[in-house]
Length: 505
Image 1 (cartoon, rainbow, N blue to C red):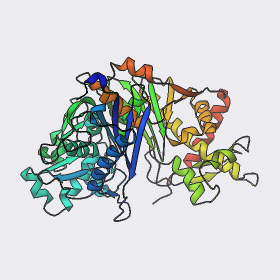
Image 2 (cartoon, rainbow, N blue to C red):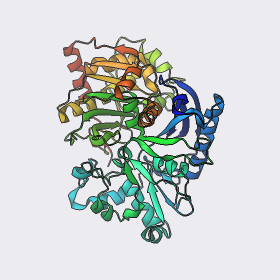
Image 3 (cartoon, rainbow, N blue to C red):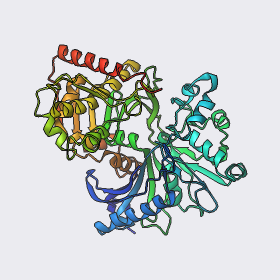
C-alpha cells in the first residue's frame, strides 16, 4: 500500500445533467485523464424530465475504471475523490434494496408547479425565503420529493416506516460508493442541501416545519456535512477501493471553488446552455431584494460557511443553437462569432431570448422572446452580434442586481463554460460591466473545484493559498467602452426587455 506521500492524484466525479465524468488531476491542478458517458434523457410528458438513477450509478463505475485505465493507475495512486453534481435533481430510493422507487426527477422538470402554488397559499412564493433563501419554484428539490411521496404507489407508507431515503445525485453516488445497502453513508453537503428548500441557512440544519409542510419524514433526509471533509471510504468492490470520499459541492458552487473565488466580491459566470453567476458574499448571508437566490457557496471542515448570491439566466448558449437549428442562419456554433465580426455594431438590433419567460432578476413567466430594431439595413451579421450581446446584457442585469443587494462591489469576473472561447462576447461583457473579465488556464472548473475540496480535506493541498497559487490566467479582457455609450446601450436593452412582457396568457 502506497503511503500518502506517494499518492500523486485526486479524482473528481462530475455527475452532470447529460453525462457523468471522472477526471483525474495532479498536484498542479492539471487534468491527467478523463472519461465520460452520456445517459438517457427521459421525457414522459411535456415539461417532465427524468433520469434512470441505476444507469447513472453504472456509468459512474465505468468512467472511474476507464479514467484509471487510461493512465494505468489504481486506487493506491489516488489520495481522495470529490463529487460534484447537477444540484436539484431528486431521487428517492429503498435503503434495504438500493432500488429507486421512481426515476430521478431532474432540476428542469416543471411537474411540481401545482404543488408549489398549493404550498405558497396566501403567503406567496416567498413564504420560506427568510429561512432557506429560495422562492417556491419547481426548480428546487423539496417539492419534487413531495410529488414522489404523493404519486408513487406505496411510497408514502414506506417513507413513514423509515425505509426510504432521499438525496440529490451527490448523495446517491456517495451512498452507493460507500456500500449502498451494506453500510452506505447517507450524506449531502451544505451547498446541495441549500438547494432543497429544506435547509435553514443560519443553522445549516434541516427545517422540521418546512419538511412537515411538504409531508417529508425527517428520517429520509441525509446528514448535512461540510463541502470539504472525509465522508467515508470507497467500498472494497470499487475500482477506487479504500480511497476517502472527501469533497462534495453542487456544480455551480464547485465551479466557484475551482475558480478560487475565496474572497468576498469575487465572482464567476459559467456560460453554458444557460448562465449561472455566483458572487461570494463572505460569512454574512445577504438576502436578495432584487430577484436573486441566497445560497451556501462552500464550507471547509468545521470553519464558518461562506455564502453567495446566485443569478440564473435561462437562455444563453441555447440562443446560438436556436440561430443554428431553428433559423438556419449558421451551420455550427463557431460561425456566430465569424458573422458577428463582419459588422461594426449591432445595427440597433436587440434579441431578448425570453423563450420560456425571463429568469433572474425578472422572474417573469409571461415574457416571450423578441427581436427588435429591425430595418432593411439589418443582416445576418447584426442578428448574430445581437444574439451574442444578449448573453452579456442578461449577465449585466444579474451583476447589477448583485451590486444592489450586496455591499460587496464586484471587482472582476472570472468566466468558464463553452462560450468563453468567443472573444467578441468576452470583450463586450467586460465593456458592459466595466470590470476585467478573466478566463482561466484550466476551463474544467467544476470538476477541479470538487478535486480541490477533496484534496484539501486529506492534506493533498495544504490550504486555500496553495490553491490560489495553482490558479492561472489564460486571458484577460479589459473594458474599453466609454460610459456614455455603455449607458446608451443599456437603455436600449431595457426598452427591448419591456417589449417581451405581458405576452403569454
